[in-house]
Image 1: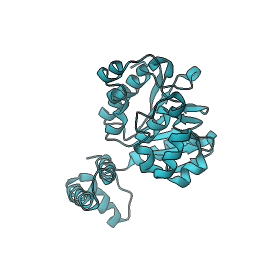
Image 2: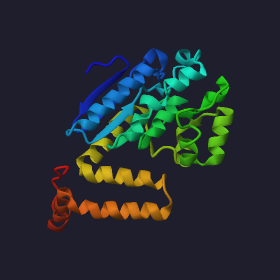
Image 3: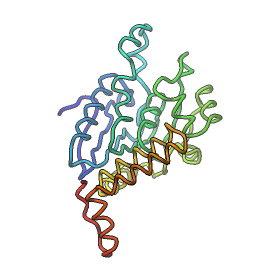
Image 4: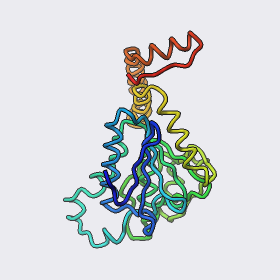
Length: 258
């Protein structure tokens, strides 16, 4: 499928999506987000894909939502069209792992888009921020919800109330990003990481993702019960039998993703 605002391609068992509005620093218009959602649909359906990477350019992952597109919205425009909820949150419903490879600016909707992914790999030039207060509004795609869960109330409150940007090193210390990588090596390392995940049993990978996400949606005891039941269920997998047999035989497992 041809796209106008993204580039979707495969690298082995990895689906790679590159945001591609360079003149607008990858500002997130509705058309781009629809294309992103469609690409995620295709990669999720494909048996050949085990993990997904979303990236932008070295200058900007995404510099925010497209302000010019929404500046004249009325309340009913936003409400009746279910702005943001429709298409934007497709990432969080993707059952396969999604990695954000962030270089340059990830601001507003760009920061929120990255946080929808399962984890963020940041280039050393990455800058994260929620500057919506400068526009007389507030984050609307998870900035007041996912950000405090990632970095704590104090830092999230400061960032949202002052529009202060957070660099890669602080973001790693605060827990927003998993690792910092030199900018010129970011995509290479993100693909290596995704390829490593994609080589493991896909059902087991999906079970782990679902279980970790459950930790943020339930109390500890309910989360532990969910984990235990999914762990028990994993014993039905052919890949579990192969993985444990390979360990006992001191050989590399050959997973069939079943």
